[in-house]
Length: 170
Image (cartoon, rainbow, N blue to C red):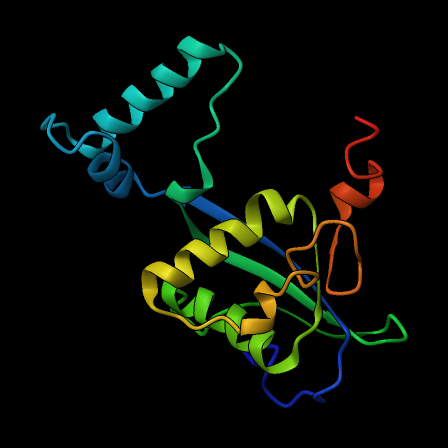
């Protein structure tokens, strides 16, 4: 199982990826209900009930409480040919291995990230996990008109932003 970094030409322009995550119920409990003596599942259920009390349709937990469990990724060359497709992280795939692999590829290759709602979810989850785990993120990631900048596809193409004309079409 060769990862995206292994035996690959150093030149690829786009890094298309999607993450799947689960709720870190222990973190949610420690942050939101530290003095209530709740079990993690009870804290999760209480939080969902609180969200639904405000908006019956809302069940999505803040990305700060998500933990990636898998990232599928594709390295794409400048001519749009596929260089590699794989899951990130070496088996057994742990959150640490997955997040380290993502940021290793990003830091070494500095590709244009391609995702769907990545600015609102995927990148946020990956940044927060990097902070929690002590994983370095290249300083250019945070520059004013870099990966996090919304109105440029040079470093980050969020397909939701692009396809909806940055929220003008819903």
